[in-house]
Amino acid sequence: MIPVSKTICSLALPTVILSLVSAVAQAQAAEIKVLSTGIFRAVYPSVVQQFEQASGNKVVLTIETPFSLRDKLINGAETDVVVAPSPVMKDIEAAGKIVPDSRSAIGETSIVVVLRDGASAPDLSSPGTVKQSIRKAKAVAINDPSTGSNVGRFIMGLADKFAFDDELRSRFKMYRGGGDQVANAVVNGEADFGITLSSEALTAKGAKIGGRLPPEMNQINIAYGFLVPEAKEPDAGRAFIAFLHTPQVATLMSESGIEPK
Image (cartoon, rainbow, N blue to C red; front, top):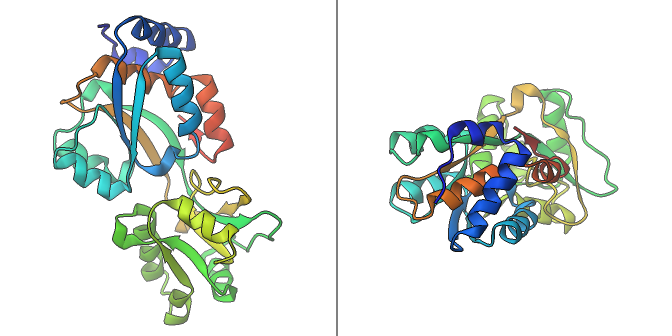
């Protein structure tokens, strides 16, 4: 097995990473369990395929909403690697579920409006115009906060903060699961537009990003990759985290509404 330092993970130099992946490939093939939120849902198929081909290892991926991930991890879910957003990191760290020198910022997301291709973007220039756009809509798709969706909770918090009346709140149509369900609802015509994470807005064919919510109504999330202390495949897990910093993965992220870190 090969040790990997924090410096290697943080610098993410392509040659170092490729050497790391190659070295792991020469060892006995490992099965890496990855527990993640949907932040990289759109890029995971390509990322996993490329990593498995390069390393010879197998990735078993489980996707949960942020708070469901937090709860399952704290309650002892078996995994090697976790990819979690900033809102739940403090709780996970307090529970002692992070190997400190393995933590690495992977990508950044924001809250955006998702539209069908060809649809005109609503005015998102201020909280007032956002409220007007919601009032004009027959339905606005959002994530159901009761399922543990951080973005769903955040949007309902905006409704409280900016004094949405009953008419405005009635426009919200809740969808269980991740932002992919919001995007699908918009593409299928169930909602005029949706509000979700930038990283999940393009997961449905025929969807596009119509713009970010204004700064007063936005939330910037950073996704972190890390090992858990109970990881059965720590070296292969570190190699997977390092692979998320390669140029090819950064390109996939950028094309999917994620800003690489």
